[in-house]
Image (cartoon, rainbow, N blue to C red; front, top):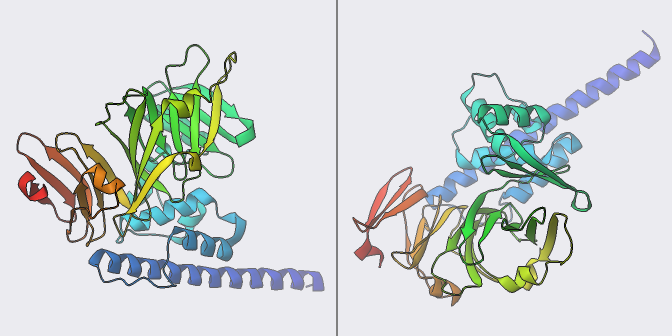
Amino acid sequence: MSEKDCDKESCSALELLDFKNALKQFQKLVEKMVTQKTKERLGLYIKDDDEIDYDKFYTTTQTLFGAEVKDHNIKTFFRKISNNLDARTEWCEIFGYFIGESDAMSSQMKEENMVFLVSEKQQITHAVVKRQDVIKGIVKVPHLDFTITSSQKGVLTIFNNQDTAWITGCDFLPQLKCVVAVTERTVIVWDYKSKGSQNNCFVIKPMENGLLCVCTVTMSDHLAKDNILMGDDKGYVHLLTVTSDHFGLKQCKGKKESQLQVLDSKTFNIVKRKLHDDWVVKIKYISDLHCFGSCSSDSIHSFVLDDIKRLEDNLPVKEFSVPKGVNAFTYCGKAKLIVTGGKYWGVFQEIVLL
């Protein structure tokens, strides 16, 4: 065996050893994160400098494995653990590989990829065939380095060459007659009424935290103003006010091509309140009660219901604790009660809430 061959074998052995050490460190990171999330949901966690949020998880993973790990795979892995602490995970998932077609979690991730992470050609094709939908329009935005697609059944998707954007929620703005959608760091307002090829889309950014859900406040009687509620991954609820002036003044007359315009979030009136200790997984305005509701998986500040005015004025809001948190809720006007769902379900009567 030549000296050159020995050097190659030595290098390979060292690389293998480094990779194994990285895997051990990654496993410890995951175990620590699961322990932290478990304590958070039990209301036993005390925040300190070692807290593992998404930013720390992302940075540590990139440090361990380098550029071989793609951003969207890190997001998928992090969300998988956060949504189900008992979920089975394999280290190869961080590189975008899943064990077996029959594996339940693998199937779940493939289904998720079809909606949020369709960054490969075969996944796009598979998603279209599976859902019997077709792509009707593709617009490339070179200066922002992303592509927008629209389907026959009304699905809007944003693709980024460096980091696929996740559209996490959408609603309709009744006063401005526009569609609003949120991604992890942006708010998108789409003026679908534009004639011909003048299809105006406005992107409001940057948002400080990752947006997870959105809804419209339907109480506004102002014909040129809408209020938007959003929940993020740090437990904050945001109230964003948009008017026709924000978008009408930005439209360029005489241009025929599609327009996508970026607006600075600092130019908007945004109220931000910390109402939960974990992700805000759903937010909804209940017009019958003239209140908004938001829920989270944390056990202490599980469910919040109160008037928008109290949110704006930074006054205490009504909150309810549910073991293991709340993942969903709905209101029944006829029975005058709210039903919550999570690890445990609950029923709140209107008299208790208000």
